[in-house]
Image (cartoon, rainbow, N blue to C red; front, side, top):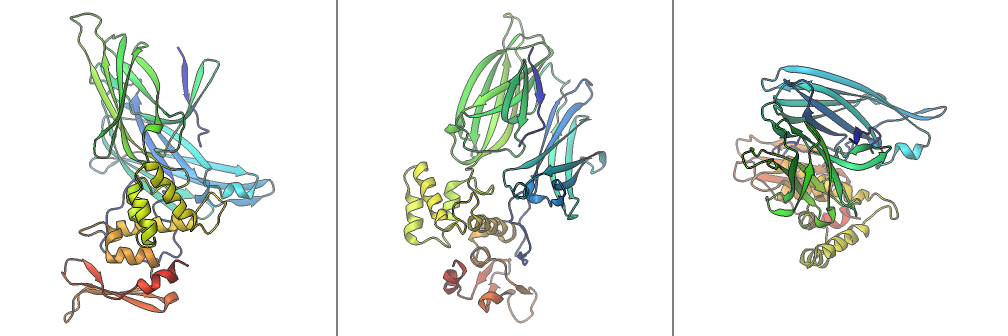
Length: 432
């Protein structure tokens, strides 16, 4: 039987919308890019009363602060995982410390380099919250993530399937396969498709199983389906499967696994099990906040010319849309020839900030406050008047660099602030 090892050399909570709370972001990192990634997967353990939980993390080098040493540069950080039950009571805490050493300064600034870490523990079946805290040692900065997790009872049925691990790549040597997990759930342009791993637990003695893999989009529309027959290797079988990623345009998807045992005889019982997990197809050159090309194009309307916008929106094929979109941002790249386009990153960072803070009856980026924030950035000062006796609620945003005050009024009284100060003369100045 082939041995499988998870390699440790491998290369999210959502914020609810807040009503019209803008701050000065001049000292903030771009919004929408997670400071670190985390994935938690459950597998059957040797103890029938609990499951094994594997927690993986990836910390981008650009989040860490490296200190110079005689031999290069060193960064240190600590990750703590707190597990809370449904009542909010802590049931487990685990901490690991990491030290990263590199020789060249350029490595410390790389967007493509990550520090991996892993921890394992057991949990009884139930619903939990995982609180992850990253503490950066040099700067003292703290980043947190919270996610929900349901741990199944693998002893409840004689046939079941583990959680699904996305895999960056697999290496095999001397009959032993090493998996390199994909922690972020982001998949890029992979010409040979992407791999995923799971375990099949078979206590009923079945010798074969039909495995059906299906990918659906965010509207539950089936994008692809394939099936295969596998022989089961005793009570636990390890499965590595490959999906053709070329079939999926950029966007958010669900990978679904349906497993069904094959009968040994006409009187034998058939067992089934299902699992699903989310993933996102992305373009390697674009920010992680972008997953929907049509939406990304619509969101350029504040800075695109009519000709540019119509060409992208009316393109007849996905390939043409992508080409025009990338050309649109290539022309605005402040540092041509580099992998990063800071202008594009900042723009969609503002879009996401607008969605998180100004959503009301519509998405935040479409509101007047959202539009202003996206075009002009964060104001230098905000003067709020929510409870004036002789006037409707209003806010004044001051942009010192433009020597301009911009007024928003809530005519309805329901937090729907409308722009009353023209700003279109500022668009050209803001986009120079």
